[in-house]
Image (cartoon, rainbow, N blue to C red; front, side, top):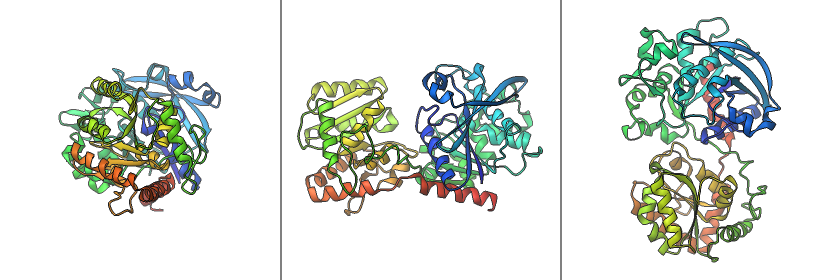
Length: 475
């Protein structure tokens, strides 16, 4: 099959979150299964400044013009092969020569341009996709433009569209004036995009895509509930016959304790002794008190939906139980200040590093005993999978991908500890159960082995995506 992934970011060229990891990994897994899978993304300024070695791989194919309502804008196509996957980078310096990927006053116009350019690009390259898989609101207009302008044009027939929701919170909401002024879509098509008195790009994709996927099975049914849907539950309930969830994987070659040069000592499920050396090295690096007490790792953004409020409420209770904390992250000032205060109050037990340091994150994954992730909502979550890859036991709330990837060890057959309600003392109870298992050396070693053996590779997820694509194409 010919499959084109359209996304606003992808590893290794540009990344701001989990979306880039998915787009950098899933197409590679599909290529390994014998399919021609390619990626199209914007050619950002940051690619040129941060990755000059990648830019040397790029060759320009051609250039063309793109209609952005009444405007005609230049677009260049650059291409490179990375990890067996062909990347197309679409260049327009007016839209993409900026510091950062998102957060500009004209983001609507920038990604209207990109979405229209993806379809126009197909006239210029020797590749016709059977499937275009769009990702999040930045590419949500591709199936809309396809239905309104391209569906019956020569060379565009029978292209199927799969729209993947990575985070429903960000939907591409704008005033109605953008329909004609920026998108160039006739007013009689407003019903495709209009929602609650505004233009909603994600709603347009839900209307026009052939299938809608989310990044975990649980998230697929959670977003039918107003608590999780950020207002889109009404349209999703009507379109749920299109909806399914496929759990993300992680790059098991990148996150591999048997080959990772960033950690103090390599280890595996068969030879786990190196895990203790990683813990000792982490304690030394973070200037925490040496000892056998359990270490809880936290690598996250300090925002409310990550469950930081729950951690705040019972943090000192956990410290007084004998736990140590290795915390890495940044975000809202109130949370940064709280963790900094806890570090000054308990300097031997609590280490807080503000910001994001990928090398330190890897050491926390490898050197901690447990990983705390009490999210209010979590479409998929990769951190809990990475933690288990390094034999670190996750403590999570049962939501989204956390529910689908972590099985509670209540019957001594799980790979972590879970709690259901968004309640600090329910979380504390899960921490206490983890501590009780940790104190039983035999049970803890068995649990750690089950976590290390958990399979979160992209291969199984890729099979699920392929089944969906083949169903659409009747192959």
